[in-house]
Length: 491
Image 1 (cartoon, rainbow, N blue to C red):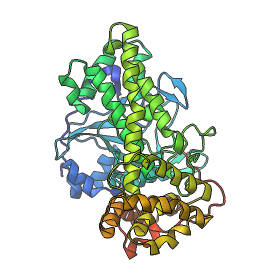
Image 2: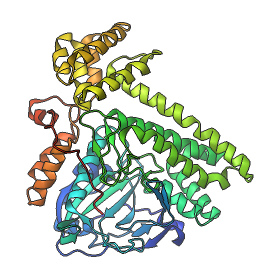
Image 3: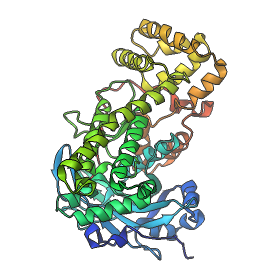
Image 4: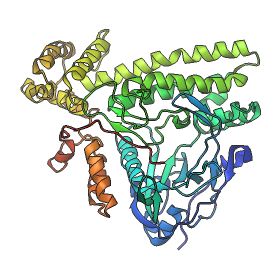
């Protein structure tokens, strides 16, 4: 059987300065653990053909399909604020690009497929736990409607990887609109290669921002487009309580998608200082810092584009600063609009931002669960008899009562059928997220060879807004943790 991929590899054609040709390192005994059949359909791939031993050979990198052009991409990046001039794909290989059924160009990448020229003495492999974490969380984000890379498949390699202890090896087949990052531009800026920056910028415009191609200031339009997408993306993250964990510039996608699910997690009790990454000891990437970090990363992107913005450096800086100044307003608008919908009002009023921030302040002080609070607000908007379930989330129930007086006054300002309002709120306030304890349970079971908890959790995460009895356990509150939850990048 021949498995066909409709490849058309534009990034590989940019030239050797952008990547290194790299073949995946074969593994001993590839076995398909999970295939994303709905994503196969979206990509125009034959799921039945891929769900075979031959498919496992392809999705592990043991066999390279016709038309593929495997490469490891070059990039640099600021990691926790410190610039590293060469990073690159150290354990990932871009197999090629396909045009999906809607005509969208999508990368297919194998993560954990062996060493590359950028591995920096690493083994180029991935352990099973981090691969399954990325599968679960990236697919949960997609179901929540947040732009993200996707998980096409998880494959067991039949080989151990050695970290603190030996762990089962795995490979993630990942799909993205592209893998171009802020750090990709930084790679060439650090080398003073303005020609390469121009080629990369033109590639990104053609691929992701075609509207910029028709204006006179195309590179200003590119900077504006990237800035606006990042503002909207981070606002969407925060509206579901997501903490990225490692918002380094090499982890910021130019396409405006969430990428690299290493030390990431979702809030349980709301606290803007929450950090999940084990290596983020100073809280640089805490939940509440994410907008500022996105703005900082965009400034680094703008620095790379200066030679394209104007021949005169002073004028180029002026253009960049003018564009970057718009980020704060765009983020605030997206943030307030999203949280307003979570609270129930449909029209904008001047004090909506205050109503939102006051609720979050009370939630932080009273240790209220983020997801459950907003989900139960829909019930309370339909009937005040549901207030009891909300009060139970707050250490001091009267704190909710005091805020709810203002909230109900705000809802009364725009009469709407209570059932319709609840339906609208339930459509933006998920009942089910990748609760940290559920993810850990699924990963722990998978390490013993039991994929059933992973499968059940993955099925539940595909229906984040459903309120059905069979999914109730995944919407329940987590147990009180004994210690703060920490995640690891898995490298």
